[in-house]
Amino acid sequence: MTDLAQPFSMALPSFLQHLNMLERCDLVRSQKQGRVRTYRLSPKPFHTVEHWLDRQRTLWERRLDQLDAHLKTMKEDDA
Image 1 (cartoon, rainbow, N blue to C red):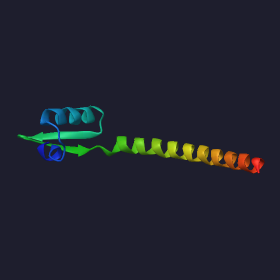
Image 2 (spheres, rainbow, N blue to C red; image 1 turned 90 degrees about the vertical axis):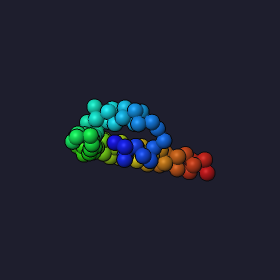
Image 3 (tube, one colour; image 1 turned 90 degrees about the horizontal axis):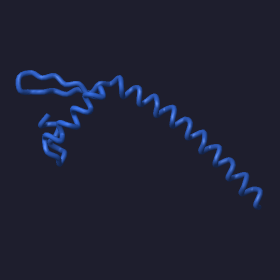
Image 4 (cartoon, helix red, strand yellow; image 1 turned 30 degrees about the horizontal axis):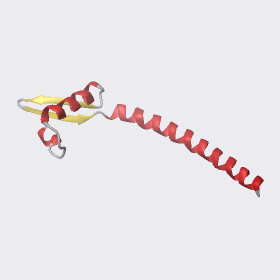
């Protein structure tokens, strides 16, 4: 945990709270061996988010294309 926290400017207890939240959300998993706790990413929840983002991206690209087409027709009508 100390190695993970090093680049961040926050106290270790605060950083631990963040890690605990990520672990409760199943985004990371930890394993303790002696005094060392090792964290690993859990890829499955990230795949779920990736699929959701892909669907959102497709939806918004389609909507923006429709808006662009509509604005072009409005501009042509004004000309």
